[in-house]
Image (cartoon, rainbow, N blue to C red; front, side, top):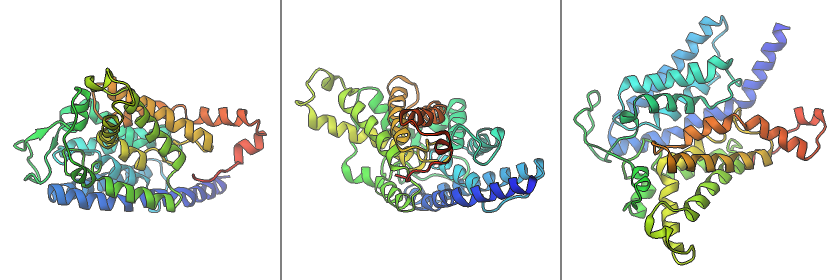
Amino acid sequence: MEDSIKKQQAAELARTGGYYKHICWMALPLVCMSAYLYGPRPVLLCLVALLTGNLCDRLVAVLRRRVYRPGDCSNESFALVIALLMPATVSWYVLVTAVMAGVLLGKEAFGGYGSYPFHPAAVGFVVVAVSWPEQVFLYPQPYADIPLWDTTGVSLVSGMGSTLRNGGLPTVSSWPLVLGEFAAPLGTGAVLILLACALFLYTQKDMRLSAAVSFLAACAVIAFLFPRQADLVHTTVWESALQRLNLVKYELVSGATLYSAVFLVSEPYTCPKRRLGRVLYGALLGCVCMAFRYFGVYETGGCFALLIVNALSGWLDRVVDRLYHLPKGEQATGKEAAV
């Protein structure tokens, strides 16, 4: 019995392990870009996050008396995703706490690999965002001189999400917007690199395009129809269409929205298995995310929304199964394309 469980776990690791390895590899271009914009500190932050995630995995293996599995890169991928959501000036203890919360609370507390109902990276980010918002939601300007250890003297500003929440319109031009040359978390600003990462993950069948596209579409539709700028609210949709489209551009780039679509939405154990379920999941996630951004106090609403909608992932699959009247055996074992 124990041997069969181990074989089942090994098969599951072989099936989904590639996703986490690809996430780790796709984080490298973002780390390089953040090093170009902010100096060597982002590289050290990501290395510390990787080390913390790996040590947590080894610690849990000892406590649970199981063999450490080096092929399981999920902890390292969660650690990198968390690190790239942080500003370049985040304190070391905040980053370590975020990774430990994500791995130990978000993953291992629910049974470990594949058993967690909530995205561990979102859990880790939310814990430190609520605990130290001044560390998480204030960013240095690109090309600022950032010391490796003591960053208290670095000038920090709010991100574009704060400007949008206050009814303003960011003035970042298109090329700096594409390259990430504006105050933002480490890995969330470089649109061109994020799109390249999305293309690679899609070709490797690691990106659930139906969930990611419906998530971005829901965010875009809400931003277009219900702008936060007062001068657009009192005009008709067609009269201000170009202005609203320009606003949608900023809404999707700010608040780690595009980053969430690429690196968070498609996680294999928290995303629905059925295609229609993924479409509904992404659309609902987009609505909840924009609700957090419009009415919440934090400009990054994706991780908060993810924790809420993750709880509905299995229910959405069951709804789709009933909708198509699938037999129980097919409901349990049926597979769909990753799209």
